[in-house]
Amino acid sequence: YDRDSIGIACTKRTYFEEWANQSGLNPEQRANRYAADLLLPKSMFVPRARNKPITLDSASELAATFGTSLTSTAIRLVEHGSYSAMIYCTKAQPGRPNSWRRRWFSRSPDLLDSLWPKDWPGPNTLASALMKGDRAESSGPAEVPADEWLDHKNAANCTVIESSARIADDLILSILWWKDHRQLLALYDDDEDQLFE
Image (cartoon, rainbow, N blue to C red; front, side):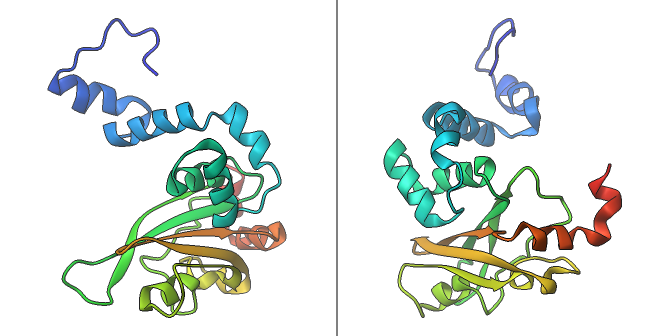
């Protein structure tokens, strides 16, 4: 990651400014990216992920193969799997019973910025059922309306395959997968200018 640099000094300035500013990631994100490249190298991961459904079941299987966490493997699957997908982490809000919000998300590199997730999953999602305790610790995959997850004007016209799991008392991890790529393309109909930039 720091090839061709003169030297790395562990000063506050280097850590918080120079090292962080490379590739637009903060130091923690950059360290996570380095760990993923080391433990889940693309040359080994991509062939094993090829044509697998982008679900938590697939991520769990790959995590067992590589000896890595479900979360890091699921992120890698979304980024380097064969299909368009998004991963979404929901966190309970401290001091606010039954209140959950998006903590972070990541998506396949081929998804446009116009596909932005909502701040919390809709009521007709598997994640919502997990939040209420209506289901076991994991759920899915199942087809759900895309507008339960996405803040996009055409999201009501398609569905996503959702798989969700409670990964801690206050965290739920969800993968959204466009099994039918034609539905994903339909979302881009009004975004042609951005698509061809």
